[in-house]
Length: 63
Image 1 (cartoon, rainbow, N blue to C red):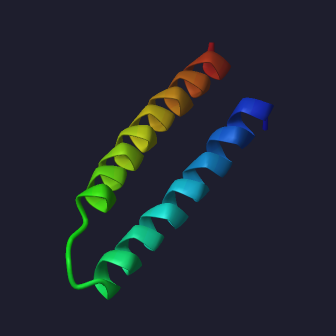
Image 2 (image 1 turned 60 degrees about the vertical axis):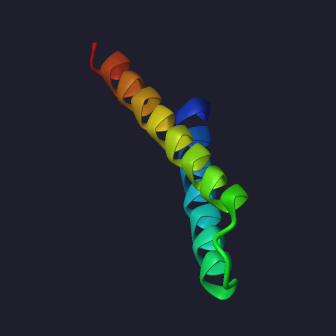
């Protein structure tokens, strides 16, 4: 596993933990914070970009 692949894996794990923290915080608070909803959107976009980069790496390996 290359350094970039390791970094992608770690970032994806961190994103999953942050999403869980946001879900738990949203559940525990009575109001839906726009900041939390915005952060969730940012995390989803970052996750999509990481998946694209991961696919690009796989394609490079296969060539």
